[in-house]
Amino acid sequence: MAGRSCWLCLLGVLALCSGVEGIHAEHEPGEPPIQVMFPVEGFPVVNPVVLTFRLSGLDRRFDPRELQCLIDGHDATLELQRSLIRHPDRLFAQDTDLVEVRFPVELSAGVHEIEYLWGPSGESSRNRILVEGERGSPRRFEPVHSLEGVDLSPPQLDWELESQPFVDRRFVPSSRPHLVVASREERSATSHWMLMVDHSVRLREPGAVGLSWEPVEELAPGKHVATVLAQDRHGNMTVDSREFMVFEPANRHLWPVGGEVEDQSLGHLAHNFQHYGGRPYFHPGVDVRAPAETPVYAATGGRVVALCYYGARPLYFEVAIEDDDGFLWEYHHIAEQSVPEAIRRAHEEGEPIAAGSQLGEVIHWRVHAYGSRYDHLHLNVLDPWGNYLNPLHFVKLPVRDEEAPRILGAYLCANEGDEAFPPVGSVGIPVVSGDVDIVLEAEDSFGFAPYQLGVYEISYQIFHLTRSSPRPMTEPILFCRFDTLPGGFDRHSGIDGVFKRRLKVGSEVLETEGNYSKRRFLYVLTHAPAGRAVGAESYWDTDGFHPDGSPRYPDGRYRLAVMARDISGNTARRSFDILVKNGSDAQSK
Image 1 (cartoon, one colour):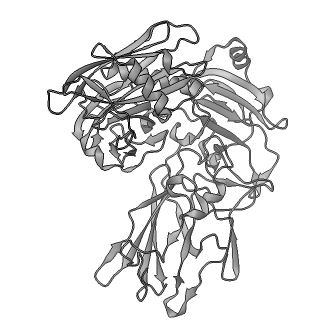
Image 2 (tube, helix red, strand yellow):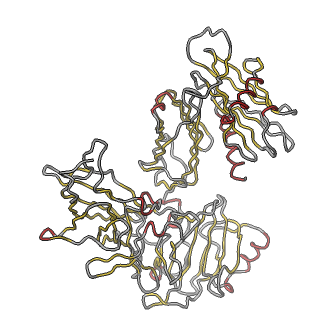
């Protein structure tokens, strides 16, 4: 219920900011506030107008007989109640504490005032709307009794930020991000748009096909919320929000590990595959390898919310700090006896600590990796909703990373298959057909140790090698960008959508591995577009057809172009040639 309450509060803020008079009187339980949400004042609409209002805070079954409606001072209550009784499908989002009602009416051209009252307490809300069209209707309003032909569906939106599909909690490396929002439906051409960023109206676009915005002034580093109101000509409206985070390298927090930089390296990243004989999972944070007894410092200040063991003693002890923005910083593998008394006292008394405060020391790790000690600090950063974030977005690296990832090979197999298509004949490139998976072997490294690391970002594109020049068959496809884990707070979710566990390549068997002695990462590019794992239902459809019956990928030679990038911006590119042979030149559907 907490999430829904926050959403309703946001709607109330939006209503007030957009010109809707939302009256929020103090009320007892059972006497919910009422809000006229749509149409928004100042956005013209056409008939039939869909009057929409919401009742929140319900603790009992909704009874339409307790609702009153006035249109231009005329009592439309009876018509509204009859409408809801005859057409119960005009109630939307009905739940234990929320009801949304839509009342389609015909209104004469001009300005109209709508007022709703709820229950014996007289909770009310009102709005003025402007109806376009010819004037002179004999009646001020006429209820629409039949739903046939009445559009009650709100616009469906597609968001893009920095030319990529917008994902919640998106990390943006620019303080002036480019935001584009469009409707999936043709009626967006007659919609009205409003953009709010951090609860301030930034842009209005009446009659536009979409919304495009780039801030004139730079946004401050940190968390921001973009909210879009999109209304069609009948008054149906979508209110949709996205959160994004602006990061500037100069504003990142302190590196949390002291000692000599030469003794440190990144042993795991916040998306490495790990498997120690149980259930495989994504490594949720960053391992900073440093000798035992190396001091650990708070990268940012905040409240000490945990000093505890979260696993077997003595290795799994943590100090957790919640910063002023609500992000949780977990420092794992601290030697318990090394935690200073000042940190213990701050935890007991609820007092904040400053950035740079010493939290303790790295504990001696009993297991070796690659033949040497693996003493390390494990750092997690979680957002206020409990999702794991990539800590390297938050801290300054102690040394400059100038080494690009390595693309070691690309393999193609049948969808969900375990055997790669072999190179054929003198050409030496694989010949493929049907539903194909593209598997990429790639890795990264950092610092002075030999540990293979996962790749932060991978994208690819397919070209048809025609006689004249390569012709792109796809737009560049983002496979992954590990700002968060695919499952957010779930370390296991999506692991088999991102990684290929086993693949036979000729006489050799390749396996994705992540343990103390061996690491290899095989990414299934066709299974997890944009980092959202989807699995077997996604593949390269080499024998698919266009609606006109022509093959999407005619038999011939193609090129797979792959880009791998680390979080510092170092980029590697490599291309692989492929032969498609489905007999599609002679067939059609």
